[in-house]
Every structure is written in C-alpha cells, then in structure tokens.
View 1 (spheres, one colour):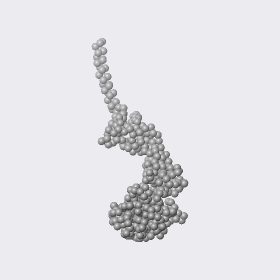
View 2 (tube, rainbow, N blue to C red):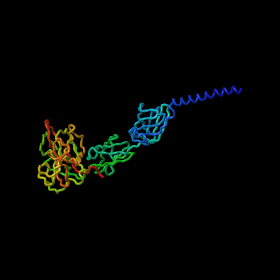
View 3 (cartoon, rainbow, N blue to C red):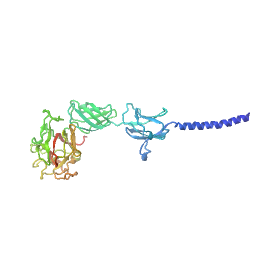
View 4 (cartoon, helix red, strand yellow):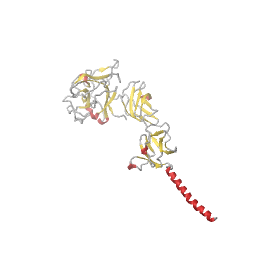
Length: 406
C-alpha cells in the first residue's frame, strides 16, 4: 500500500509542474499584465529624460511591458491617434492630441484589445493664449478686427480698452475675428481663456507721435489728394480722412505731386522738432494703408531730412543726412490688400542714399542722427519698364512709435 501511494505521489509531482509550465506559457502568450514604467521624449540621446507632462502636439514615447495589445490611448477626455507600427510590447510612440479637453483628470488611459484599461498619471500642459498682432490697428466701432496669435480655445474672451468686451465672430486656434465694441478708445487688447491671459504689445488705435492723420495733422495740400470721410469714400475709411497716392500710369522716376505725401514743418510755420526721439533700433515707422488695385514695380521711397532742407522732401544733392527706406511689397508679385492693414517699417531700414543701386539691399547711409530729422516724404519714385500700370495707395495715421509697448 505504501509503495502504491509512493508511485501515485511521484506521478502527481511531474503533472503538477507541467501544469505550472503550461500556465506560465499561457500567461506569456496572453501578453501578461500591461505596465507603464515611464514616459520620455523621442530623442535617443535624451532617453533618460523622463516626462510627467507634455504639451498638446508633442510626440512622446511610453515605455513599459506588455503594451502590444494597446488599441486606444486617451489623454484626459481626448483620444490620440495610434499607428500600429509604432506599438510594441515595450514602447508606444504617440502624439498628444492638439484638441482641448472638456474635462481634465490629468490621466493617460490605455485601452487594450481584451478591454483592460491602464491608467497613468500624466499632465497635459495647455498654454495660455498668445497675441501676436492685429491686421489693422485702426478699425471703426462695429467693424471686424482680425487678431493673430495662438492657443485660442473656447471659451475665449476678448477685452478692448476701457474693459469693453468684444463679440467673437470667428475663431481658430491661431486667429480671431471680433467686432470692435462701441465706444472703443486707445489702449491694449486682452485675450482670456480658462488656461491664461495675454495682453497685446501694441496699442489699438495707437495715436502716439502722429505725423499725418489728414484730420488734425496735415500734409502739404498740393501733394496726394485727401479723401474726406463725409464724401462717400471708396474705399471706406479706417479713421477719418485719408490721403491717396494715385496715378493712371506710373513711369520711371515720375515726379508728380499726387504721387507724394510731404511734411515740411518750416513751410507750414511750425517749430523745428524732431520727427521722433529714442533709439533707432527701438522705433518703427507705422501707418495704415489700403491698396485696392494691383501695385506693380515702382517702389515707395520714404525720406527723412532736416529742417532747413531747400525743398523739404530730402532728395536733393545738398540735403544733409538724407536717409530713406524702400517699401516694395510687390517684389513677390502684384500687391493688393484685403481692406485696411497696418504696416510697420523698422527705423533701422532707413538706410539708403538716393543713389544706391536698385539691387543694393544693405544701403549706404543709415540714419546718423535722428534728432536733426524733421521733414518727411512718402513718394512713389523709382525705376520701372513698360508695361506701365496705375497706382492707388491709400494712407492714414502715419507715425513713428516704439516697436512694442512696455
């Protein structure tokens, strides 16, 4: 009897171990329990840089075990797109969704083929809004202002000066179209989302250091004609009266009064006052323009010269320190604008002498002393060839201001 029991025992032991081996193999075949060890960036040289958070759109690597069965990955309540070839048992390569979550639990969730769900603490950093620019700094009340930036997400609030909230008419992640509130004045614009706040580094309706506005600050009346706001203007105004540089056909070095805008303070009986003060590298020449028909080939020269200059415009041979900028937005093809826009030309671009060759992009005469420059001319003037084209360039609110506000 003891011998029989002994044999039974000896038979049971191998069967037991075979069962364990089969169970173990079966578990391995099923992939085992998924585990995440860490998350890292994709750069192999920085594989030891572990992440606990990432930004929307970041490409990350999830490192662990038994991950091959992953079928879905969620960050908060947003599902990421999975590429099967980027999934192995040890790693998953995935891009964090660029869509904004409605609910944030700061979790990553991986759903596997068998329905198993793995949760892992992981934060998605959603930046606050950024506001880069405005298409036109002067927009009438009730009209559309176009803002450019990033990270504009619902809900977004746009605040104009005097704490006036604007109605949003269109929005993307990088752009906003808003209706300018009634009663808007000069000041900064603020953008608010639930992730932060941004304030413009420009002024809406910037009225600092205005040289021309054709309402209060006037040019020589025998130059470019003024279009009056109360005269059914075409195009519509952006801010009261404006001047129009206009001609039916512009030829090389045409010297026509209606192709220039001239500020000559001595001729107007005004005191000798510099056009601007400050560091040249910190200042910009800025104005609003509307170019409704195609502008071809002939450049705009913008001159600054001294108070006692014999003719005021600064292009004379005997003009001291004539420095000018060349504005040629048509260089990549005929130029028009979709309504009014704001143009900014750094004062450091005022670096040309009138005799610098056409292909000279460096200039030979940068501004040497801003404090003696009191006169200003904007004129269409330069070389061209047939066929000759008409020009119509509307100008308003010419000013020299700091490139940003503090």
